[in-house]
Amino acid sequence: MEILIFLAAGVLAGIASGFFGIGGGIVVVPLCLAAGEGVKAAIALSTMQMTFSSIYGNFINARDRLFSPREYLPLGLGGLLGASCGAYLLHFISAHLAAILFLSVLLLTFAKSLFAKAEGESAPRRANFVVMFAIGLLTAAYAGLVGIGGGFIVVAFLNGFFGVGIKQAVSVSLFFVLFVGSSAFVTYWVLGYVDFVKGLPLAIGALLGVRFGITAARRVSAELHKRAILAVYVLMIALTIYKIASGEI
Image (cartoon, rainbow, N blue to C red; front, side):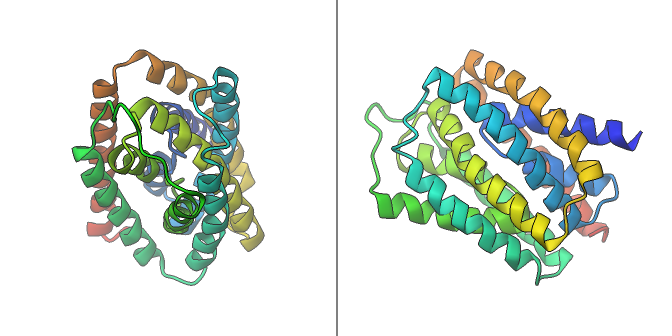
């Protein structure tokens, strides 16, 4: 039964990853907490499934050439370094503080997405290497600390500050998550937090779900896409607040 629960969680995370351009941690971490996992174990499991789902998701997006990977490579490189920093920080802080940080990032990204333009600007602004690298570094350090890929932050940032349309921003975000997820996963593995017995069903489920998520994202309007993102925010914020307030974490 436990394997089926983690498999189902992986499928949901994969769908979310493909549809929203996220790592799926925003889904996996609360669900793992609800299943009785500790915060650090839940975060480590999250990084494993996001690595698998982002590899497959980026294979699909690269085949369809939805954006130029070279243009956003600095973002990914910054994420690669930042994720390891966040993962090591988790090794030294309490589970309760990690949960509060996770809630704070949910609230921050919800507020940003609420006011972002779904269609983006007709001529999106471009950032130089240093700025894009810094965005990736800081986002990934924070995301790696709380067990998410940072995708929601990247989507909101690209859409809100650079005028990138929601569809392209989601594809770029999944590219970013590939760097963050793999870096954080290796770090948590080295630190001994990854449970492969539970992580494998999660990863398999994520592979099954990500294709469906990407297909669905391409078929809906940008405005509906944004509303779906906000709906997920509300659900995850409510669940995380409940877990903190009830003293379960």
